[in-house]
Image (cartoon, rainbow, N blue to C red):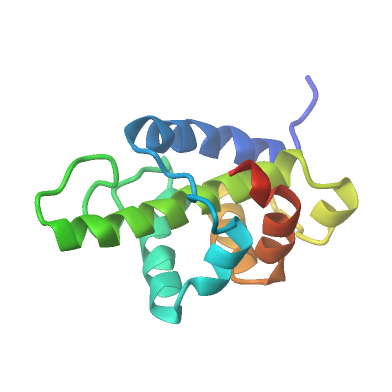
Length: 147
């Protein structure tokens, strides 16, 4: 039996979680903003909050419980809802970024991001570190129009 590469393994682990979040809430960026401009508008504290929320996706099994409760259940407070929606968008785009990176971006680009096959390491590498690098802006400029 042929061994799956680490990119395929990562994609297979994250796909169900991305689908769960997508079913639970609309997450697309509204025009006229683009994913790239939205990504550039994220503040340091929003990125940090996203890093914390994404930690539960870097564990086995990946889950959407995050640090602020479930991202898939409703909240009552309007102010809390705005913050949660912005966090959900960030989490969803990090997931889609990882899925696109593993499937759509050229092999040469993926070769720059070496994965080990260890899910915890690989998920952190892509969902946190690559997301904070110019990789996310490159992805947004190529694929952002789709989202």
